[in-house]
Image (tube, rainbow, N blue to C red; front, top):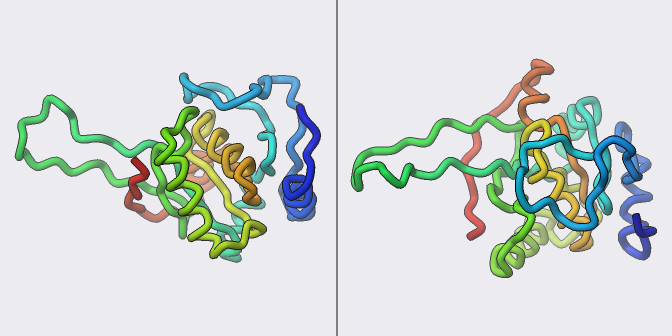
Length: 187
């Protein structure tokens, strides 16, 4: 893994000081890839993300309670079935997420088209009000590379990024409350 420099190192140093957050380090179990995961997104993930901190349930409970981080759910949104008769009513299933979270489906793909990448960067600027030191936490489900990719990408963009690997299902399994969210399109 490359050594962090400049703003990235400063952001990591700040993140290390937060309760329940660990710095990005090599993981002997699941190797950290050189780039983004491009397929098979539901598979075991590393314990770390280059350029991002890792938060687990105790730290996430604190972040949610204090409302001091931007929470971004990157789980893909369900699409209208292509074989469905045009004009037939379709209502996607509700999507529970962490309280206060934004739902940005598809931004965790390994390869993002330039317009989607640009929109992600702009929306990150918007939700942090231009403060790249404000913590932005990405999540989806347990063993989901999409949130790993999104945290890595945000860190590379210069934002103070973190990853919540337990995701919504880990949050719910801990008996913590959720709220339904609606997706924001990035395509």
